[in-house]
Length: 113
Ligand code: SF4
Image (cartoon, rainbow, N blue to C red; front, top):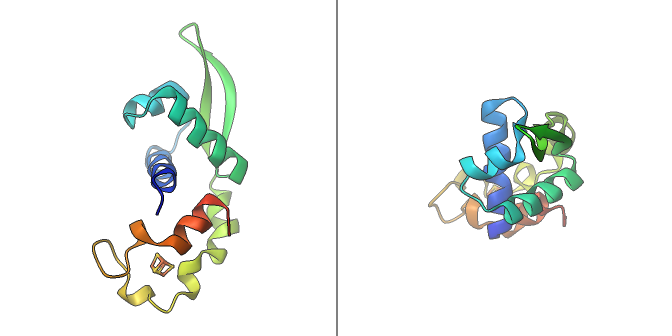
């Protein structure tokens, strides 16, 4: 899995855990990512329809509020390569088939597939 795909996964996981809109600068701080990188990652996720961003002014600071879009899972999950993968039952972190190193999954997450 590419480093960008891993960062996208971290952002999605974080947003789903907290379940509320987050200012973009807070997201960068929580995930220890610089503002340029988080902006790039969020733009990619927004393009894929995984998140939505709305312009906001918080404490006099211009930013975006970031919303996770749950519909992503319902709409796109059935197309994930894992559903059709012959190695699914052997796949796991640190195993021979590892989702953090899987090219098929990385392509799907990046929207290339
Ligand atoms: S992460 Fe890759 S190897 Fe693992 S089940 Fe999904 S497609 Fe298969």
